[in-house]
Length: 244
Image (cartoon, rainbow, N blue to C red):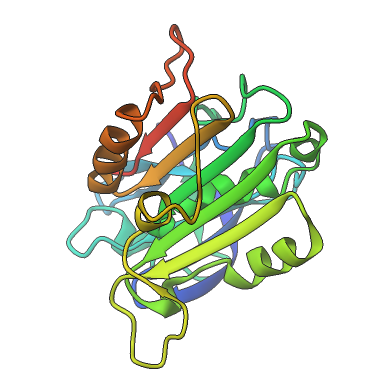
């Protein structure tokens, strides 16, 4: 029987129903590729393990903890219980880390555009926090879309990185912003459709992660412009990771 084998070290509440947890497994964290995911779980009162896959937000360079950015799904079997965890509580982490939503196969010198909604930003955070990612002469643009401005997790970290590195640019947009919000409004696709971020199949690799409706819409938009979905047996320049 799989048992709870990890400890919650700390948590940060981003906004109602959005939270970051940092977890230390009882076992050594295996090497992984930024962008990959792992299963988290909790035991029920009936001693049944409920588990779901979550992208890792921490870098594989960090060997003392794993970080996850999670949205509570009201009525869900797992996330409402994860949302109640506090420091010191126990949970299950699978020893197997997997996934193909990575930068492997992206040619050196490519211009990479990360597009995300909500917690779909997590795999990109792992990539940007990893030292050897910056050794390939890639240039990065990250676009993050959320409903409310308080949902913009990692905003301070990303703005700091954008100021410090000429190889990175950060855009964010809010679809249900308050009157006080002075940034961009609307959905992530606007940056491509309005030409703010210009992309071509010859020079760009695009990564889409988050809401399946966003991914479906932008996949059509981009494939009509010559982009090809990346698959293991048929490499392309459009990388997709649907979050539910």
